[in-house]
Amino acid sequence: MSSSKQLIINCGASRVTAAVVSPGGGKLYIEKLVTEDLRYDFSRDDDWIRATGTALQALQKRHKLSGKASFIIPGSQVLTKTIRIPHVETAKRAQIIAFEAQQNIPYPLHEVVWDSQIIDDDGVETEVLFIACKANTIDDFCAEVSQAGFNVGSINAATILDYNAVQFAYPETDENLLLINIGARTTNLLFKNPDGFFVRNIQLGGNSLTQNIADSLGKSFAQAEDIKHKFFSGELDYSDDDSGAKLLTSCSESFIKRMGQEITRSVVNYRRQRKGAAPKQILLSGRGALLEGLSERLAASQKVEVAFFDPLQNVVLDGEIGLNSDSLRLEVSEIIGEAVQPMVADAAGVNLLPATVQKEMEFAGKRPFLMVAAILLALTPWPAYLGYKQLSANYSSAVQSVQSKIPPLQSRIAVISENAERADNLSESIQRVEGLVNSKANWIQFFAELQESLALTEDAWVEALRVVRENPDVGEPSYEVVLQGRMLVRETVNGTGAIDEEILSRRIRSLQSSFESSDFIVSSRSPNINWSSLRNGLNVLPFTINLVVDTSKPL
View 1 (cartoon, rainbow, N blue to C red):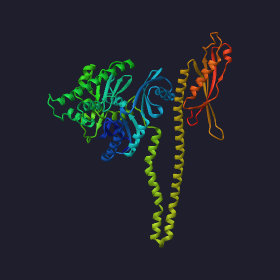
View 2 (view 1 turned 30 degrees about the horizontal axis):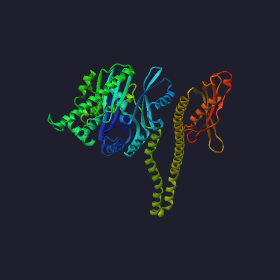
View 3 (view 1 turned 120 degrees about the vertical axis):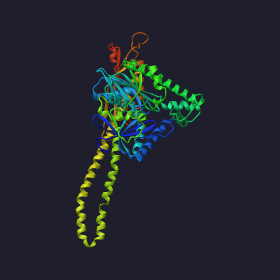
View 4 (view 1 turned 90 degrees about the horizontal axis):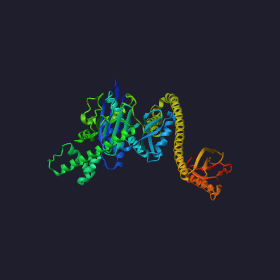
């Protein structure tokens, strides 16, 4: 594959679509486009990764696709949150995003892989789209990809790629519009306006209709999925008064009603949060958008024009691509959005591939070449040996031939040794970076526990915090966190105005005990209380607490 060509694989909830694309002259060329349906129980989300791996192996075997690729994972596998942070310089932005995100997601930050997309920045506040996926999901996904013969170049989220596709397909459109992409498990709503975009992912998709049919007919999910496709495609011929047809039609109307309610709720929420205008047009995408009656009901409920999104404008298809054109338009918007990121202004995109995994996969890709080089190196003496056996009469010339091959081999050995040393240095650097990442997560959790302890104690605050690190020549290093704070004094003795030092001491020791309950603290020293401050007539009591940090969980 030439350097201008790119392999993009969209791993959806119900099928995998792969495309070989290349830009040129302001257009996008799709030279190859193939799909593989996923075969698993769609009601079991945990089976998605295994089924995706099987489909990728089929792509590799049937269509001879392999090598480095950009991957897209569906919205059902990612967590999307819109958060607001203070406007700060770019170098500090990631740290602030991480802190704010930890307060808004249901998982510890170290258990997810995340990236962010800036939506708006007015100089005072920055609106950020936070996108995360569980780390074990990414690890398992990369393992399946590698086993299928591909290398992961990047992992993007389908949630935001339609924004790029809209800009590329309709570059002249500057009005407020809503793109509704109905997938198998979820529906992605993209609100585009002149200032940017806003996304919302709702847990309602084609599988919701399937489950409703399964419950109504008493069928398994797989059977209901088959009935759904045959009925709505016209393969099943029911009479108008058939009870089965009425039941399926009822399920369809119920789904359309729920979809309309969710979209109305999302539009109201968008206008309230962004203080923006209502969409003037609705574009439909995804195979679920073909459900009969959906577009008409949305047009009536939202009172705007509803049309199908055509992402193939400004796209040139290879003549051998034989997919149905209508179906094609509903399935490739995310792939086009990924491909045209360098071609549109203010493109949206994230990368959920951890740097450590990327280095490991790059090394794994080079491993076969290193093994071949080692085998060739090991086999090099054999021709000389066989020549010696066959040409014993010419022993002298054979020896000279062997000796002439030794210097190149020695230079190769030197290069291999140098590369091995460089690999060791890189491994040590990676371990140090991992330590810094873990320490960053520990600090965020420790500050959260510290804030909780102060809130429970009441009338207490911390004015200064410093870390004391000791690295003795013998034994493990020790860490202490020194907290300097103050406590507001309200207690008096029998209402006389005198200070009850016993009560204040007990409160500070209780605060100290609360600090010790942290997972990062093993013990603490007796608090240092400055009683002279109270005797001088001040209404606050200074104190100092030394906390000994657990060396297995350093800060």
